[in-house]
Length: 185
Image (cartoon, rainbow, N blue to C red; front, side):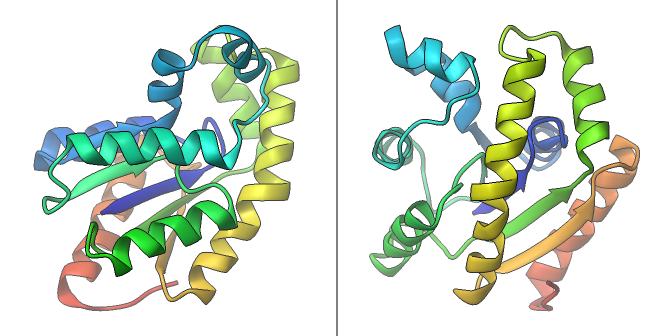
């Protein structure tokens, strides 16, 4: 399992799709899944930048993992985002449901993210929603990367401000390190 981490606009979707296309991996974006599966009031709240609860997120990811062959390599974009979600993922590993993931963290500055998100012109990319997502990423998700490292997960920090091709080259290089058993963090 490959986990893609990074703030909204860091290029997770672009890199996830590129890896899926190049290597035939399943690509699961929790953001895309939520935009399809979450309805009503919760969808409206999500579109304004509010994150879903751990229970809601875990429930969706759990259902999706039932639908795919987890013995094959796959990419998970947007999960985990909290310590509780990391613990759930590690529990799934201890149960033999999934392999221990490698984490690709796409590092990028807020100004670059804001510029990218405004250009993609999605309904949930208002200035307010972008600011809220970045704040929640900094306060909630960024500390999760430290927690993942403390739990023994391999986290590769990649400079996402580079061109998409350069980022992809670095991501593929990190994954090759994984195959050879090397560690970077």
